[in-house]
Amino acid sequence: MKLKSTFSDLISKSPFGPIQIHMEKSKECAEELLELIDAVIKDDWVAVASSREKIIGLEKEADKLKAETRNLLPKGFFLFVPRRDLLDLIGLADDIPNIIKDISGLIYGRQMLIPPQITVSFKEFAEEAVAIISTAASAIDQLNEVSRLAFGSRASEKLDKIISKLGSLEAESDRSEVMIRRQLFDIERDLPPIEAMFLYDVINKIGELADRAEQVGHRLSLIAVR
Image 1 (cartoon, rainbow, N blue to C red):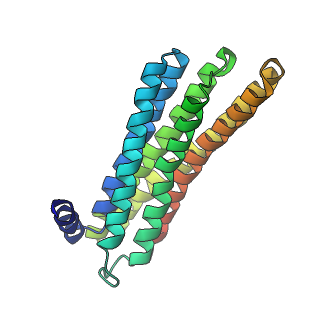
Image 2: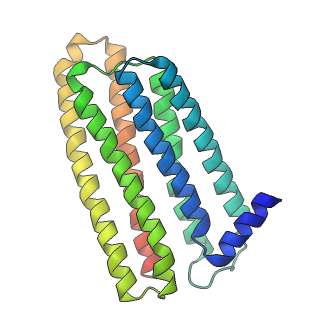
């Protein structure tokens, strides 16, 4: 009952309150993925297991937030933000902790090792994805100001700058993904084929994280111009 009351209070103040809290969980989840990767590089599987459990917990919290938000958004409740838009936004954002959970499961379940030849690039690639998620969270935070000013030019300019930054970061992430794939290709003949295959899979999923966070930004910009 307390949780529902808290959500109701948030929603009455701003329709973006629930998605902001949800995105914070996604951000925490992404930051924990970096901890997990650091532990893998250090070959500390106790720490990897700990990070994996934290990620599972954060993903469950995000799922609960999404479900509660859907239940507490009656049709036609908002005048300036259609309910469907907000639910679509939460759906996109919710992919982030789900993908992170999948990545952590692959790494931990297979006791995956990151070849030393690609360790630096791999970590930088993951850090770039987390930076994009963090920037998307900043964009969502900005929407309180956007709605307060009725989508005026001052607020829109701020949001536009964040969205532009998202695009630049995602383009850099794409370049990093090409580079790390090339590096892995150069050494894959020295790796067990199944290990190379799963490394490519993890790289794909980290790229998906960056893509999804940028999509959150694009959806925000569409809401802002309506």
